[in-house]
Structures are given as C-alpha cells and as structure tokens.
Amino acid sequence: MRIPVTIVSGYLGAGKTTLVNSLLREDHALKLSVLVNDFGSINIDAALIEGAEVDSIALTNGCVCCSLGDDLAQSVNAILTRDIRPDHILIEASGVADPVAIANTLLADRRLSYAGIVTVVDGSSVADLLSDPLLAPQVGQQIRAADLVLLSKLSEAPSEALLTQLRALGARTPTRVDDMPLSKMLFDITPLPRDATPVPHPGYVSWQHRSSTVLDRRALGDKLAERPEGLYRMKGFVLTSGGAYELHIVGRHVEARRCDADETLLVALGPEARISRDQIETWWTGA
Image (cartoon, rainbow, N blue to C red; front, side, top):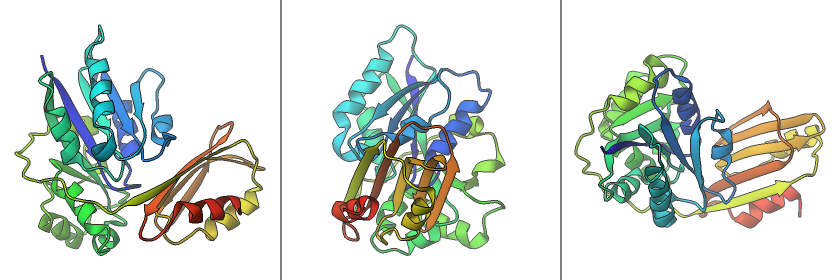
C-alpha cells in the first residue's frame, strides 16, 4: 500500500510550523511522520515541532529543492523500511524551497502517493511580497503549485481584493486556516495535475549563531530595533538577563516570547542582493 505524502510549502515566516503543530494536536487518529527542512545548518523548525511522540526527522543545509535530493530520499527510505510505517508523511519545506521540485523527487518512489501541496500564505504580508520584483516570482510559484492555499495571520475573512489577487495567480480555493479542521483540509485534498514547473529563485545568504552568552534584555530590544534592512527572516532562541526568549522576525514584524532554552540558537536569512552574511554577523555580534 502506498503511503500518501503532503508537502507543506510557503514563503519565509508564513506559518508552516504553526500549521503542522496545529495538525498534530488534532484528533485524526493517524500515525504521522514529519520531515522538517530549514534553511540553515541549525534546524530551528524541528525544535519547534511539538510532541515527543511525533516521528520527526530534521533536514538541514538549506533549500530542499536545490541541495537535499539525496538526503530527502534517504530519509523517506528510512521511514518506509521501518517495521511500523506511518499512515501519512508530512514534509515541511523551507521557506525558499520549490514544492514542485520536492514533489517531482518524491514521486519517483513507487511506495509513495502524492497527497497534494499545501501552501501557507501570510495574509498580512503577501500583498507586499507580490509587489516586490525580487521576491514575487518565487512567492507566486509557491502559490501556483499548491493544491490548497491556506491563509494565515488573518483575524477575519480575507478581503475580496486579496482573494482576487491570489486567484489571478492561480491559487486553488484560498481558505483561511481557522475556517475548518486542518485534518480535513490536508487529507481530503483531491490533487489536480501539476502544470507548474520549477522557477529560478533569488540567491539567499544564511547565518547561524550558537552561544551560551547571556545578553542584556534591554540591549536585545535595541539590537532588534536596529536590525539591517535586508534581513527578512530570523528565528531561534536567545538567552537574556530577563530569561530566555523565542525570537521570530518576518520582514518588518518582530515577536519575542518567553520560553525554556539553555543556549542561544539563531538562524537568519535574506536575499543576497540586499544583505551579506558579514552584515548580519556585524549587527548581531558588534564585531
């Protein structure tokens, strides 16, 4: 019996890990395996997957569509050769991955069946992303490739202008994440023929940081307020004099919430046309 595979796609900071965690909390009675790809050598998203009983495999080294073909295939094979196989496999792609390329890699394995691409779209920022000439082709490709588009970070129904914009891109049935059970949306998809082809995306620079140094909490606030403009995504855990914080930066938005952590672990990313790894390092460390 073939094992169905769902690919969870979406641009940086759209809410993919939040979606996966919400699904894992639902009472769907399915044994799931989750493969998590992140854009840095420190896999923050895997650390954020909830539940010790979840079968989760972390993939690192960057964009799964560009550099992880063999690692992805090996990880899937490891799952499929276990004595107890899952009912369903979820792949949380990195924010810069092309879901079409991932699907094409996996569907060569006859032990798997294609259960669809779900693309998470940040309803609060997608209009800005689609107006950015550097990022719009990649964001649009992720939307066009989806069998289901889920709108996150919206407290009310999406505007007709947003829905019109998404449909013009080829979005299939844009649906707000909160509007129906996730297990129904993910497992009742009827995949349509995929006519989208992989497209080149802009180059990105990534940065990683691991430290046991405790940062003054007020200094952290000042640092975040003065972050370099080209830094689009940053996430991880920071030790401060006021305790540990889980940190998320998405474009202009910053969120820091209390958490349990025993070291600072951070990854960051931005388009190489707008920022360098040295700029991120200098900003964070003051070197």
